[in-house]
Image 1: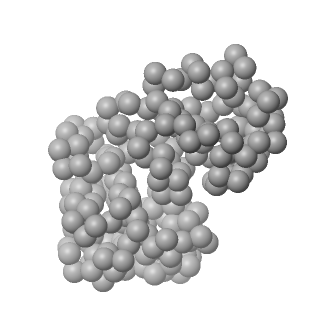
Image 2: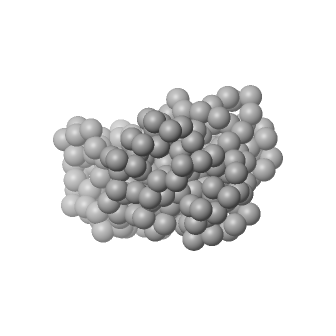
Image 3: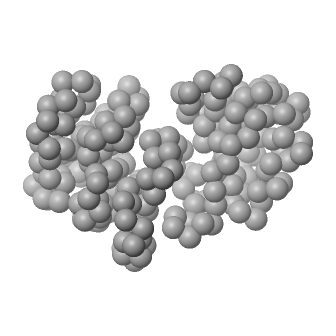
Length: 218
């Protein structure tokens, strides 16, 4: 997939580093020092400029992007660039929301946002790798939550994610941690789940108890 990440600060840099091995990533950064660092350290195409300028986005080949992520510290830049991406038909868009007071305008313009209090890098990565999970989340309105479970149900041991989910409209497994390792495994439908794995699951709020029981037998 072709992706654009706006901002090479801590979140943007780590997100690009995490995704560059599997995707063609372009990073946009206005600050010169961050631009130089990203250019030297990342295996990505890095554009120097403001994403609030259409010429910069065009230089980043916005028309060919499959996903677009804006994670600068400036909500105006994040919003404007995301709207431009939406107008150019980018199918997956996520934006970092710095000031909760701005959430209403993001919602009004149909731009999905993520509060930086969450684990932004992991969350965006999951949303891009498994976009089907996006349909479960009413961003900004709390229609679903990401919950983490340690698998204790032995009936799930050795099963593929596709078998566990069984096309459920109520939950999606979006990451797996093995033996409490820090790095998440971004799963696909063939990924095997085993007892004692930790999994992150997007769950519709009204089905949390059922899904918890499925994984933990509690």
